[in-house]
Image (cartoon, rainbow, N blue to C red):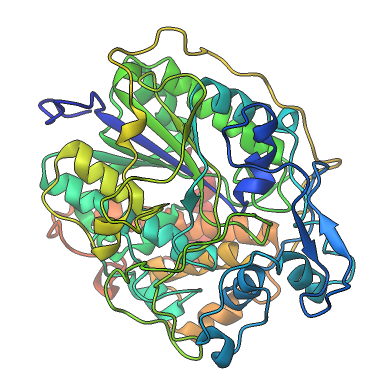
Length: 512
């Protein structure tokens, strides 16, 4: 339940809710919202990319508004993002040359991956195609200067969301995944100051990438979304810091709702609608700030140059060779919507006014703003100390009473059903490996790599269900046995010796 007595002389917020969707740029998802509000730094259709950045006579692909169901997963690994931003392939020489970000390499990079693919990153959704976002943007606020923290993949950006660092990771790091990333998080900062947090998950939560959250004492901070979220909203017992995690795997009977290509965007819209309506009906609504953002751009075009000057490394940790990235520039701009009855209708949040001349809105802004609103003791890293804070969007003297109670139901966008035989995405691979590592049934990195070879979606879902069920049982048993609350669940002394068949039967018989 939300703690009373927060130092809020200027800001009435007692509950912050964070929902992070997958792999879309601002222009791809919200760029055409400019047609509804000219103040938004979106697109007009004049934006374009050449098929070849080295050919001055190259055909240029103009940005369109005809995006629909997106099948291919575009490039978003570190070196692919480099080419998208700077217009040239990554080399040690180009990386050290100081060339400016032109945002001219999206079409070229996509075309190099697959002939004819260049059109896909150069398109966006009409506002009516994403009606839930359309209405939220018009009713509340959109931030058109929010960047991903790392010019790379999902995992490092999701790490920045709650810890303002990825501890040197720019891609999947199996060793750190097994051990758990060691950095301090905003969850611990909240706890230290007497505030509450809760993680509402639908599949095994990616927040368990953080080692410290695997401690016995945190088991009661994890809640199954379908069982607890609406109930806690109705009862007014949401904690001070709420994180909501999606369905990351796409099944016919239970489609993914995280927006990751090739998942149906309408499922993500339904999910946002469900969360918003539950929050809106809560007695805590007038003390709430709800933020929706995306982990990274997923290879889709954005016209705003990514910041590359005076971005501080969070902790001095450098990524592995050959890239040796120093975390001194940001990733591509991503969609971000801010929702609260304390926000004026149709607001637009541009760049921050500090705390430093070069400060930007990026994922570390979440930790920075939480620290400010709740008067926490310390920053997590140099990055959240530098990042802009967004409490300034709360401009009203009193909460609005005209916020919509419900949103429109989006129409299905994908023809047909989910492809349960599809290969796993990089992030899905990481979630499978996370669950395997948590139980301790797979401790060797080679085993974890072999585990996911040729694994299909339907197989992955069954696997993570069984493994996470075992992990949660071990977690609960450790607490019941009175083990030290700071013990990291997953260490070998806590690992169950159940056979796979026993675990499967246990999972099938469990209502949870």
